[in-house]
Image (cartoon, rainbow, N blue to C red; front, side, top):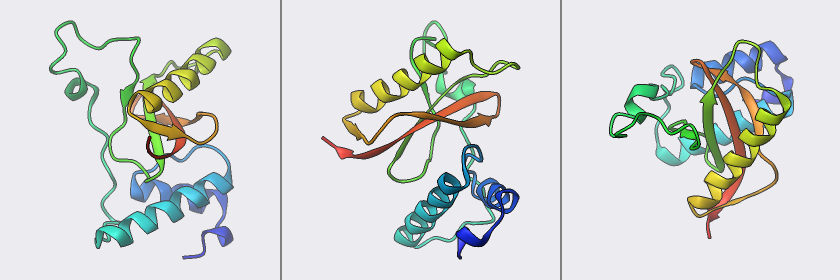
Length: 142
């Protein structure tokens, strides 16, 4: 599919169908969809009608003795290959500038802690299921 020819709204609809974040610029959604298509071709599956479900927040903290650790970003679950994502609790007014900078830094730190090599800076992709989703493009493990 030639995603470059689609409108912003059509790209957002395609991202939603695949369970991908819909925020940011058109070029990023085109890249996200193209990466997703490559990953699906590698898997031999074609689940475009089945969106990827994010794990509920309760499932991520089920084994934590004192509940979620506000200092640690929560992994988002299945994501686009070459992209590391983290999510943080959303507020109705969105993150403040200091929170945004902190979430970006924590997303980068989390990727490095997992042995991934970030390619550039982390950025906010949007709000999904009450969480701010941040991502950074990464290369394989160091």
